[in-house]
Amino acid sequence: ANFVGNPQCTAHAKSELQKILNFYFPDSCIIVSVPSHAVDYIAGDEDRELMRLQSRGALVALDRQNAQLWLCGDPRGVEQALNRIRNMLQQWEKEYWEHHCARGACYAVIGTGGSNIRQLQSETGAHIQVDPDQGVIRVFGGEDAVRKAKQAVLDCVGGGGRW
Image (cartoon, rainbow, N blue to C red; front, side, top):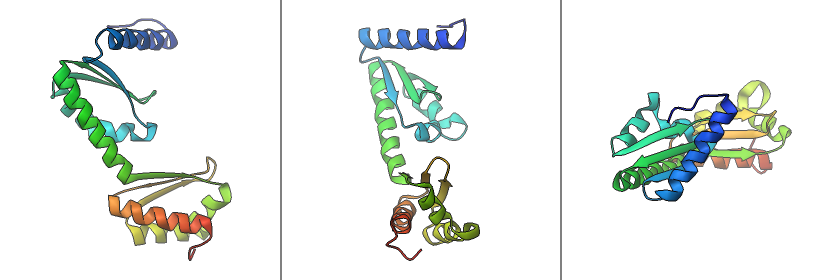
């Protein structure tokens, strides 16, 4: 369907249509909510993963703003795409970690001139992003690197570590 009108009204109309289709065709039309930070991971580089999901026999639409996937089509294709999404989310949970903390704890992870965060990244192999204004620390990378970085960050913010 092609909706025309102001963005708020078209978003509402689209949402209502999806609910109606999901109600009448529960095996063929599914809405999947994903964590907002996982949206790009699910889409893949240049949306290649979305294209792979569609090759399974389902129409796949990603609403990045609301962090939702819309799957519609042959029930078997929808189920295959849904299983792939579940597997991807399980892997994402192993390769991503987020910690909310006080601003002071964020600065402890950063260290003077960024010294602590550089050392943490070097020792663990994970990428670490710190946003003191939001009070959030994000860690991503390979499963082992994230596990090591998570423990190092918790040691750092908890005061029990060497940092």
